[in-house]
Image: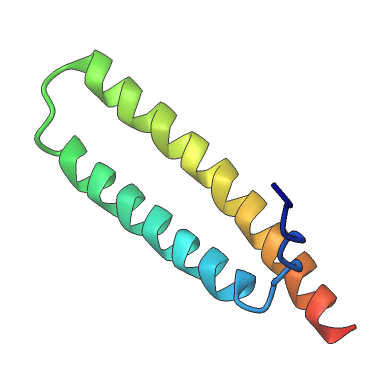
Length: 75
């Protein structure tokens, strides 16, 4: 059985995908912040805060990757 050649690296829509991921992450953070108003448990509050901190780190990584991808498409 012969293997087909792998598909070429198509990065043409990576920036758009990453921007969608950023928007989705921001929406999740907003929803989490709103849910904090209805949380009685200190443990739940800490969990929400920890998740949002991870989301902030992800946003930074997404934004750095968007810059890299944008630079790549300019070349």
